[in-house]
Length: 302
Image (tube, rainbow, N blue to C red; front, side):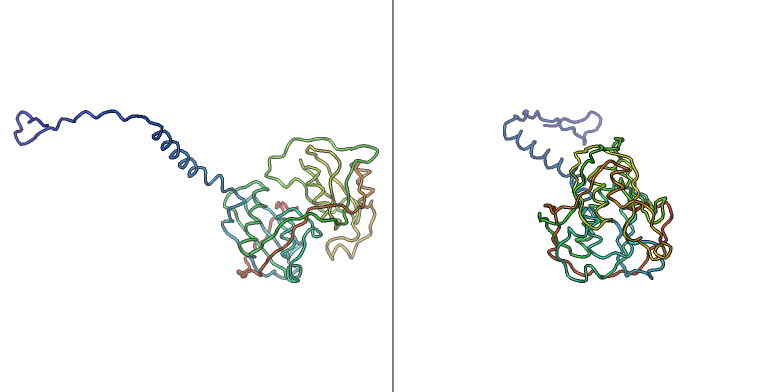
């Protein structure tokens, strides 16, 4: 029903009719709950699809520039968002992305160990190192169509244990995740040696990097489960770079003695069960134009 407004015969105001209150039934509660779950899923979807599912914002894969323009082969990380890879085979990229040594990668055609690539990728914002490494896995799947699976196999390896003299490592604070915890920091003080540094690294992380340097998986059986700051200097069978080989006069301990003397750890050669990564499928990527810029001296690299 409506009533006329005094002074305005053509204008009426409609009186709202009372509405019966809606009954809150079990069906109503279920419907509201379902809507809340759906809305919550949509809001948290970007968080659930973390870096391990997200690709880099920009990825360029190119043929390497002349070898003499680079000082080393490997990955470099700058500002926790830009990743450079220089003079890398596919298997070397897999090592970094999946935390394995070369001996732990099974299968793959000949080109996966022979053809070299340069890679530059940008995440668009600073990311923890673990997320950047997971994004490398996504990049390999997208650009190289890489498919892998894990297995356990008996392989020659080194087992890392405590020396009878006891550990010389002192625990440190847990790292923030934005720095490479264990990495090479160049040549050691003695000729022919290399320096390996841990800044809040775990023993499994140290074992992985050490295994890459000495060419065999290192299995951690020390029982040390904290984070540590230390530096290890030891002698390789030969230096990495040809320029260094010309002036190489070795004067330092090999890795076995260095571990005992400097860290109180022991390394023994054994055949043990280790995790391996089997390449099921891989394809050569479509190359982009080489646009790798020069890397500043502040760049971190493992």
